[in-house]
Length: 325
Image (cartoon, rainbow, N blue to C red; front, side, top):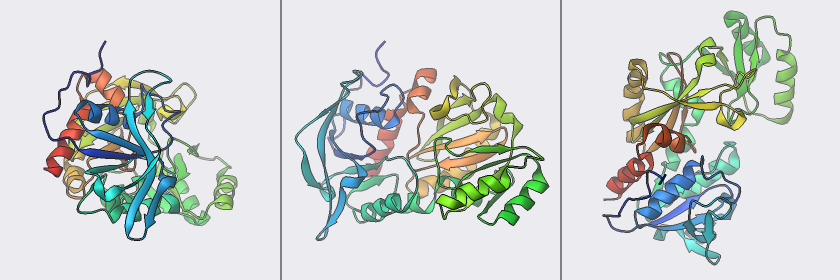
């Protein structure tokens, strides 16, 4: 069966598009959202360039990247055809995609500062200024009525007091991703001190602790928003014996409809996302609660396209083309 984006014929003016992303070689072309965005851009007649974030530089007034002209094809093991390596001035591109995965450390933050310098001539998606100021687990603090009880702290006494108030809790690194380092601590669990010691031993960052939501057993919903508007959702169901529903750790994607509560959450956060240039966002909803707003490198496009038969990548490019116009 042809992919939902395979028959699109470009109508607008061709643009030069650069993708700042993790190495393209090992990606899963049936799941990777960046690959899908590149595939759709190519179908629309745009010119592609690819580089890894370590090849981004500030060089005597120019923001440059060393990388490769890119052609993509849906062929496992031969999905990325690279041209000759070259150094480009990113100010000469129409759009730069900020798509590398966290950890959201100083390396990541520095790339956002450099990409900031391309405005207003080059559109960076998502807007790096607000990616830097809206990390996944911090932006939800602007919407306390939508989120579960939460504390962000490095101090063990604060975390312990929160756990005493709420019983079962989820503890995780504030700037992690993909389900790495996520722990469920049941009421009476004696491992909090050891986990705190482990985390603080290798990182100066705080931890985030949330009241455990038993509804996660029925799934953790990923809702995709394009320019602040919800376009669909997938449900991620934890594997047997797992609390985490992330697909990186074996979560199973399922077709799901948006509920009235999901639409209420999107209506509350959508205008802010649109205003701040967050074109492609994935939010996480468990039961009635918003748990994360993912703006750095959200995923889920391909799974949603397969379930709903809707070209989500095209919707994202239409939003970008409208902003460029």
